Image (tube, rainbow, N blue to C red; front, side):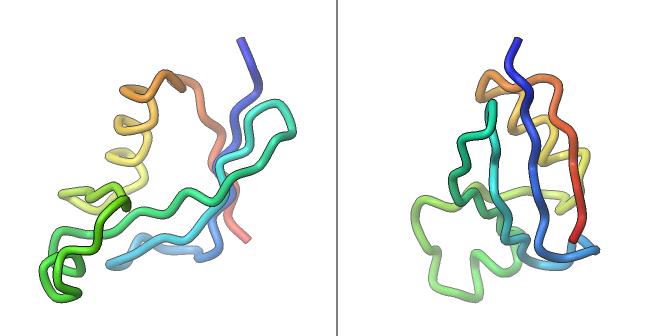
Length: 75
């Protein structure tokens, strides 16, 4: 199983979370947005919407994408 890290650019889950998904050292931008922010920003495409907007919901989303054991790091 690959090592999977989600590096968060913020310390709290508040309307949006910019971050990087790092899989075995390969990094890609992977952001999340809240339902409220999604509606207020004219429904941007391509950003996973979490409701409720929590680390636990992000963890569930990533598990559904095939990454069940993600380590979250806050910077």
